[in-house]
Length: 286
Image (cartoon, rainbow, N blue to C red; front, side):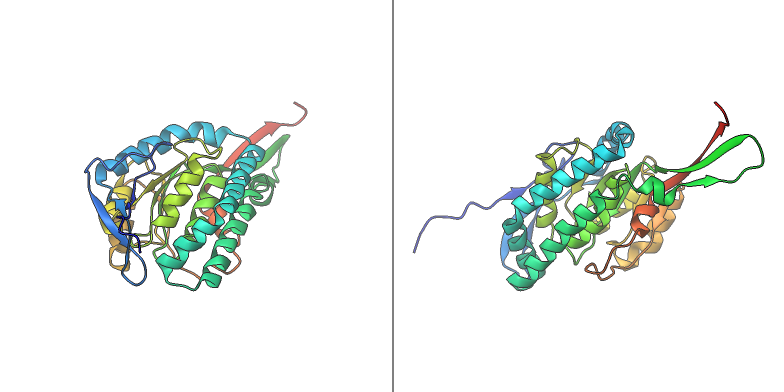
């Protein structure tokens, strides 16, 4: 039996493509489903929320202007790297969610497949959700879906990877940038996903990951004037009304939903949720 001390890891935030500590210097312990210590995670503050929004806004212009085909390639590269770290994700999901190894493997495989599914949608959204409008005159009129902007995502609390992928992938597949508040008690798969994003082709700032207490961070994210939309799926039930009121102050789009069965077919609801419709007119014959 070894008498060496285990080197405990302290995970950091993921902001603007870098891994800083929380400006507050706070951390909190992450335990498995049985209460056994796994690691320490940074406990983000309101200033970290602001820094994340600044990074997401700075990245939005370039990411939203990238071609849909290019975004699809970038997302598919993420799926390749998820596959390469499959064993680590399986171990983290099993520990955090308290499920058997076989069930954890199925959830991780579903998450990777879902990321690929959304990657394939990047160059199809305009065709499926856009339209050619009938007009009375010598013009063409088209309805074109465009990204909303910076989206705040309160990640699912129970489904640490599959649920996270199901809410994050459609946000960035459609050209938005994201500030993610991870599952409070099961943040490790989200942090590992951040490490995957950092070493893939996703530009820094497109996805920003905050670990910490959801009830502390969510109000600042919902009220931030430079956040265009917020997904409340992981919000505590008792805070939802307050968060909706905070979001209304800056006329945000709000996606209200309870946690569904994440293993079910995803559909296009979340692809549509954070898109705006732009109408384009063009003279005939020009």
